[in-house]
Length: 263
Image (cartoon, rainbow, N blue to C red; front, side, top):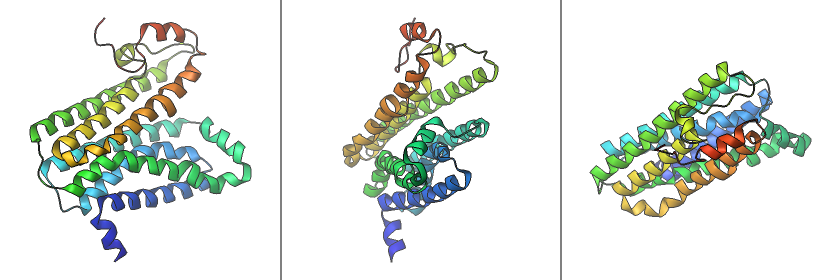
């Protein structure tokens, strides 16, 4: 009875998927003594929500499937990128080290809600537009516009993917003190974060074009945008990078978030 109730609701199915995944990841973090593994599962969580929603839904349409596949591709790419980066890190990310020092011996159990379930809640909230589309169901209201916005989302995915590739190549050969200011990084100081934001705004717009009843879920891309700029993205990174020689000059000639298209 409980399983039938969960699978009948995209919202409950998404929540159940996240709880199961993050519980497993939390246990793994205790074994590895590294809470930083949550970062790589940030993207995979969205992919699993989309996959679970697709597999359990009866309201499938070509556009809904295409949107779900786009989210899965976004999540798997981010998971793979961060997994490869995590394998090269010699120790736990400094953010989680600071939390571990703050909470001491209690961190192991406090981390399940301060780190894992909290991020799970954010994943679920950002995924609400996609889940709402399946909740309301039906054929796309504006199929052409849905495709346009889906293309915008894929453009964001392409941008952040290429920016991460450029960053990875740069880090492999960069000398101490060098700055990456070419490619996408010449247009904006955070092309990967901007591409990420563009992807989720595109997904939201595509969902609303297909299912106008989901317009109320606008809080989802706003949350993701805020996280990318003010919480775990641009602000946090620039707080550290400002100390790097030449970064102040780089800030003066390069847009912070939205890419400079000309000049």
